[in-house]
Structure formats: C-alpha cells, structure tokens
Image 1 (cartoon, rainbow over the protein chains, first blue to last red):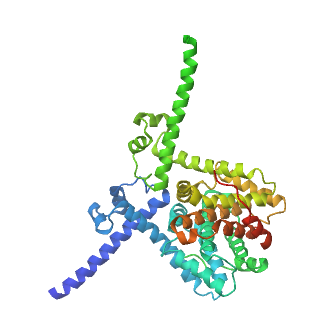
Image 2: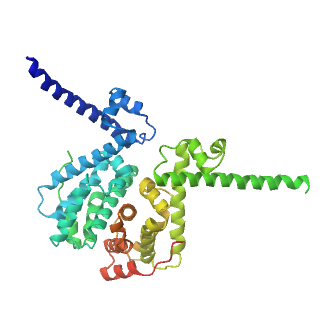
Image 3: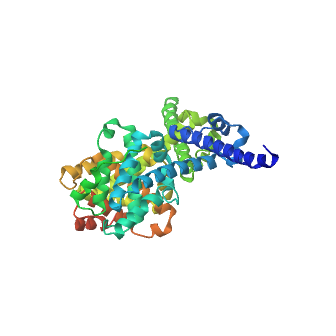
Length: 214
Length: 214
C-alpha cells in the first residue's frame, strides 16, 4: 500500500468511526429517554452506557441537552421515514393517512421504546420541520385538495391527529385492557369521520390489511 | 392567655405555616416546569426560588421528583376543578364537553404557564385518577348514555380529546398565526362531529358564548 493511499483510507475510516460513536451516543440517549432516566444521567453515565470515551462526547454534542434533542429528532425522523416508505404505494391520500395513523398506534406494541419517547417528548416537536410533521401534514393537505377531507384548518387537523396518536399510545402502554382492543382501527375511523369521510367508507379505510412494521 | 390555650393556637399556626411552605415549593416547581428549568434545578435552587429554608423541603417531599409529580398533579387538579365548576350550569353533557374543550384550549393565552406544563407533562397523567380524566371522561360517558354521542370506546374518545387539546395548546403557544384563528371553536366542532353530532348542531354548540376563565 503506497503512502498516497493511506490518507484517504484513514480519513474514510475516521469518518466511519466518528459516525459509529455518534450513533452509539444517540442510541444510549434514546434508551434513557425511553426509560425515564435521561434527566438524571450525567455525561459520564451516557458515555459509559454508549461504551465510548468520555472525551468523544464533545466531538459530537455541545451539551447533554443537545444530545437529547438530537435523540428525539432521530426517533421522529425514523418513524416519519418508515411511514412515508410504507405509504408510497397508496395513491389515495385518505388511505395513506389512515395507514400512517394505524401504524403509529401500533408502535406501542411493536416498538415500545420508540412509543415511550414519542409520548414523553413528541408534542414539543409538533411544529418541527423534521420527523412526522412533513410526512403527515402533506397527506392531510393532499386529501383536502383531492376533495377527500373537509377540513377548515389543516394544521389543527394535524395537531388533532398527532395529539390523538400520542394519547392513544400512552393508554396502550399503561393499560393492557385498553391495548387489547383494536384501537388503531378505532382511532383511524374516528379521525376519518371527523375529517368528513362518510361512516361506511371510514370504517372500510380503517380496517383494511396493513403492511408489517419492520 | 392561659397556657392551655397556647398549644392549640400554635398547632394551628404550625399547620398553616406548613401548608404555606408546601404551597411555595409547589409554586416554585410549577414555574420551573413551565419554563423548562425543572430538570436542571437542584433542591437548593428550588428552596431558594420558593424562599423557604433548605431543610423544610424534606418535611414535605422525599425527592425532587416527588415534588415535580405533586406540582403537575396540582396543575391538573386546578384545571379540572375550574372546568367542572364552569360546567355545573349545563344540563346537556355535549354542551359541557364543548365548553371544557374550548376553555382548555384558551389556557394557552389566559394561563400560558399552566398551558406549558400541560403540554410538557400532561400526557403522562392521561390515565390518572385526578385532574382532567375524572372531569372530562364522565362528560363523554354521560353524552353516550344520553344518546348525544356515538362512541364505541369512551376511553379512546377521551385520549383523542385530551391529546388534541394538548397538540392545539402547543401550536397556539409557539405559532402566533395559528393562535390568531378561532382554534377553540374549530377543535370543539371537529370533536363533536367525530363523536357523531350533526354538523350544524356541532357548530352551534362550539360557537356559543363562553364563561370567562377566572
């Protein structure tokens, strides 16, 4: 291997290692956000949980708060990208909306760690440019433009949708009786009816087959 | 004053002073929850903000967490009691429901500190026996029993209502354009329609005069 080849290889490996360290820190922060220990954790607790050197923390984040903001954004982005990908096949925005709502509610069982973070921190990111807002709000606007939804205020409709999903996740997480009911279908049907879809069509859209959450 | 009278007087004064100290600690905690400094505050920061002795903290609370749980419960209880009192005049549970939703949304302007705490911490208390759950859930159940609402799952309807209110509060707090719209009326109307109230009646119930928030 010639000396001229070493530099780019090393730079690339360095980048890769930096990205891995950042990923480990964000994952550790996500676990702490989910189990409610984030508030009490010191930066040393975090770097130990992430299995990275204490000093490397400041190569990536300026403070504990900075890391936790990034960790919540990471969760929202992951969920948003997932819903968007699963939605891509559906031409009808009302069907896409119903599917996103149902899959988000199912997070409580399939991804409880993610669901805990959404319930604890999701509302503060309601107005964000990343995560769920740019995935679900456009569905609502497209559905209004296509004459599928009758909605005066799309952002209120989105706040209602997002808040309802979080409330439903919370009850699903804490109450097994509630979780035993088909709440994903019930919530999607309720919201579709609220947005002016006729009752029988709302039921049909809310009870169809659903792609598996990977 | 005879010696036999001193003891009851002192005991009563002591009780009063204890209650005042607890109130000051809870108020200081509420201010910190509202401005987002609660996480970083030490017990000394809190007793200084409350203007009480450091040692008196442990006469009332076992830990910082214990105090903040009590402070959020205090906010929920205050809002719940207020909505209940303003509701007492209304015989129609659908009208009571609409009024509670509208008044809760108006907290964002009239009581922004309370609104901030609800948005940041309210969801975790969704299943609670105190605060808003025992005030709003029974309105929904009464409305179903009276044939005013068509709702399969009253607890889901409550989770939807509560989550929607919090989402609407959040957007109202952060976005002046959103806040400039009559979102309290729009949200109440949406929810009433969702629960099966006919569109024209939903509008009427959601746009009537409202008692002032004291």
